[in-house]
Length: 117
Image 1 (cartoon, helix red, strand yellow):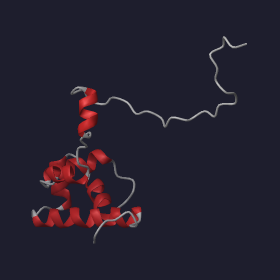
Image 2 (cartoon, one colour):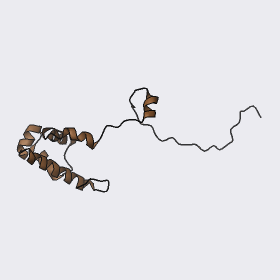
Image 3 (cartoon, helix red, strand yellow):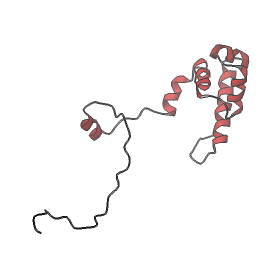
């Protein structure tokens, strides 16, 4: 199944669960064995494989580490790189905060120097 923006959250969770279950079976691990190696409960592995919403991301990462899938998460959410112009402006520094969209204020009066009155 190809994951797209149109895919529902539940369908994505179910698909990820199926992929984790298949990776576990490919590694010839039981749910209990995987849970023990990952340091999570067997119930956490069951929830991950069923696509349950109540699993924690840390449990997901531990399971992926044991299954050798952690490096693939890099393609899941790739590291963003600033544009070349932004790199020049920042002089090699990383961006540390977001900025809000700037609002343009409509001018109610025409601007003058102040000495014409």
